[in-house]
Image (cartoon, rainbow, N blue to C red; front, side):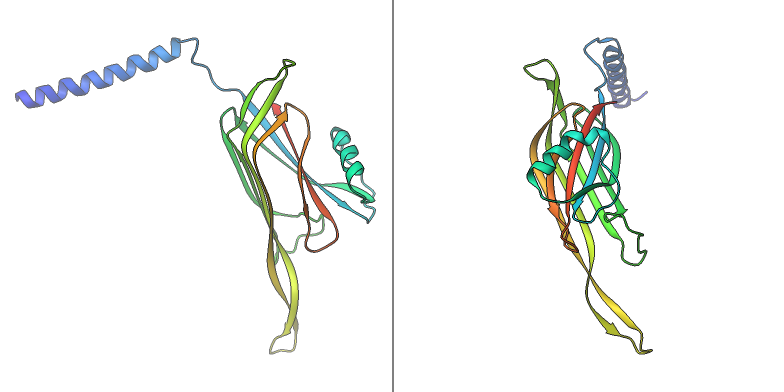
Length: 204
């Protein structure tokens, strides 16, 4: 075999062998552990003056009290719940067509929703319970709004629809593990209602 080819073969063999030893050592190393995971639950609550006849879930009792102490809406209802999973140190992103207002969805003018969180870190607080810190949390929605109308050639009146963007962004948010936490509120451009974002992170 040519001397250069022999050296190249030897060099590659050393790299492969070293990688195998390192992987094997990690498997045996008790310090090499898989990060724990968390279920992510984002609940969207709508506050308004029209009675919906529904009540908030029991797990939102503390949040409901907080809302009623700070806002004057006659009614609060759960618009939707979104669920995901994230590992300690990970990131999560969600995008979807959404029915924010709880009405039949118009296929021609849907609402679009996206939210994400990243840099999750969990650790014990002074009382020994886990607190969870997020480096970033972002929520955004694009909502169709009728701004006018026009008449087509056949005489039919058609609406003019524009999309309004609303959103919320927070950095370095701390939550208690397994506790619904109110992250913020957004006014809805098509009504006098407001949207409230409640996030819960619980061990998976």
